[in-house]
Image 1: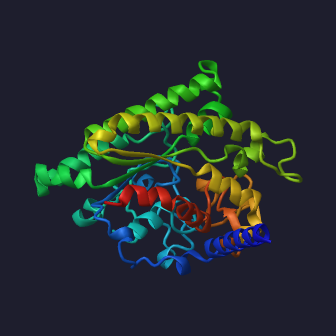
Image 2 (image 1 turned 90 degrees about the vertical axis):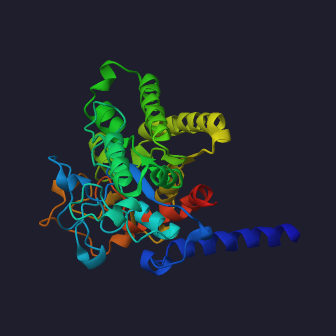
Image 3 (image 1 turned 90 degrees about the horizontal axis):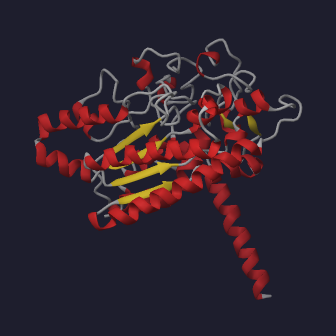
Length: 363
C-alpha cells in the first residue's frame, strides 16, 4: 500500500511538471519578475552559435541570417530580430529569470545603448563553432573590446568587479560536427571522431581560460544536442527521410560521447580553480531535447522530427523566407526550421536548466 501511494505520488508529480512546462511561455514566465534568489548578478554574457545569436549576423557579411519573416513571427511586435526561431531564445528566458532585462541584445546591434551593453550581450554568431575552420566570429576578441568600453566609462576596478559578478554562457559545437565533420567531411581526412572530439575540447578549454583571464568566474558550457534527431540530419542521411523519419543514433551517440568528455573536462577545471572563486558548470541540453522528441505528446507537441517552416525537412536561414509555408501554430512543433528549436522548446530547455542557472547566480 505504501509503495502504491509512493508511485502514485511520483506519477502525479511528473504529470504536474509536464503540464507546467507545457504552458505557453508568455503565461509561464513574467519578464517583470523579481530577481531570482535575490541575486546580485551584474550581467549575462553569451558566446556561441545560432542557438544563442540574437542578431549579430545581421551586421556581418554572411549567408547565415534570419532578420526576415517568418523568423521572429511570434517575437514582440512580430519583429524578425535575427534570432533563428519564431520568438525568444533560451538565453532570453534566462536573462529575464535572473531579473536583469527582458532580452539579451546582440553586441553588434548599432543602436545598443551603454546601459544595455553593460548589463549583458551576446557575442554569438550563427554558423560559428570551436574549430577554427568553422566560419567564426572572433567572439573572445569582441569581449575584450567590450571590457575596454566598460573601463573607459566605469574605470578599471569597477569593470573588474562587474565582470567577476557576471554570468557567462557558451553554446557551440554542433556546426563543427554537422558541417565540418559529417556534411562537408573536411576534418574526416585528418581526424577520427575520437581525435576530433579531443581537438574541439582543447579549443573549449582555451576559450574558458581566455574568459578566466579576462575576469569571468561564473561560466556554464552547453553540450551538444542529439544531432541525429535534427531534421536536417535525418533528411540528408536517412534512407527513409520522408516516409519513415526517425533519429539516427550514429550521430547522436557522437554527441553523447563528446558531452561525457566535456563534462569531465569542465569538472576538472572547476576542481582546479574552485579555491579562486570559480563556478564552472556543464549545461546538459541533450537530455531535455531528446526527451521532448521521444515523448513529444507529453509536452503538447504534435511534431518532433520536422520543422514548422516550409517542408520542415531542409529549410533554414534564407531557405526559410517570407515565401515559405509556415505552420499555423509553432508551439505544436519541437523545431522551428530544420535545425533550430521553437520558442516553446527553448522555454522548456530553460526550465530544465534552471538548477544550473540557480547554482551560477546565487550569492
